[in-house]
Amino acid sequence: MKWRTFDRFPDGNGSWQYMRTPSSRVKTGKEVVERALRNWNPVNPIVVATPDSKKFLPPICIPSIATNLHLRMLKKYKTAIAIFLFALVANVVLWFFNHMYRITMATEILFPFLTFIVIDYSFVLKKMNDTVDRALFVNWIYQYTSKLARPAMALMIIVGCAQIFLQFMLGGLEPVIIKYGTLFSSVETGEWWRFIIGPYFHIGFFHWMNNFFLLSVAMAIAGVMARRILLLYFVIINALSAFSVWWFSGGLQIDSVAGISGGIFGLFGWIVAVSMRYRDFFPSYFWLTILLFTSLTIFISSMFPHVSNIAHLSGFLVGVVFGILGAGISREISECGIDSGGSRPNT
Image (cartoon, rainbow, N blue to C red; front, side, top):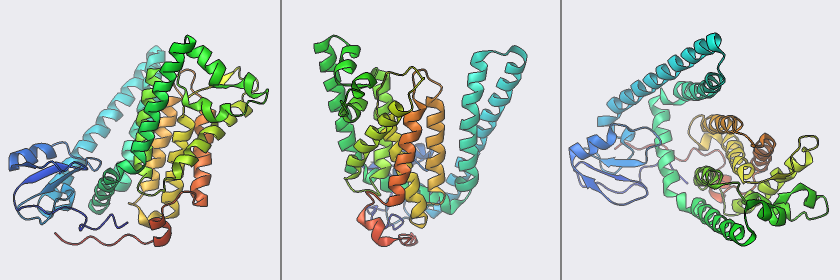
């Protein structure tokens, strides 16, 4: 799985061209390419061919445009950091004088966002080689999206439609949870199967959409480093996170749990552990980037009502354990060990 090599990219025809991975639709023209590059960043999946490059590549990999592109990207990140810092200071000042709850909440959201951007900028994006590695790895992720992300998305659509049907048949969400969900009073009578089925019910469309998006991201990243058995581990992590909520629910007035957030954060925990264990195989500080993203997401989620931090944290920790044990790691990674995947050839 040599994601750093350029041989896996298609050939260009000697003109200005670009396409968006994994699509093979090519657009031609210098102005068209320049327009596509205006807001480029390392997670943008476009690949570009120029008159002096032999292949379609992430634009940061093409020497003739890489330097200016990198400097322009850094300028935008500096601007974003300045804006976030100004907004954070302004909110703190306003809170100090007015003690408004909404201002306090805005401050709590701005600080972790600013922390994420500053750390990512300082540890990775400032360095050209690390930015190149991230762009190459992101492109690799997009190429492998269908491996796990599409089955997971199909699963989410199926369970979503099933829930709509059951709610229509039974007369609403509450009867569905009572009959099939992770209802703790029923669990305590011996209906342990609810830990397996229950997490796949959601309390509303927004809840389902949020989990759909996060699961797609987690499975897309995991797809470049996992075997399909990770889908089974995802089911197990969901069940264990629901079990953890039940186990620690004494005195918390919690009677049920819904949603697959525990399993999703378990996947991110697995990714963090695997990328730390085989860190030389991945881009620099990839584990740190995923850990920061996961922490930020858990923190923001905790600000909403009826969100179970126990499910999120327990799922994450179970995923970390699975990753440390090497559960579900693809044969390519396990055989390569700490092989860096090859060096970058010149274009």
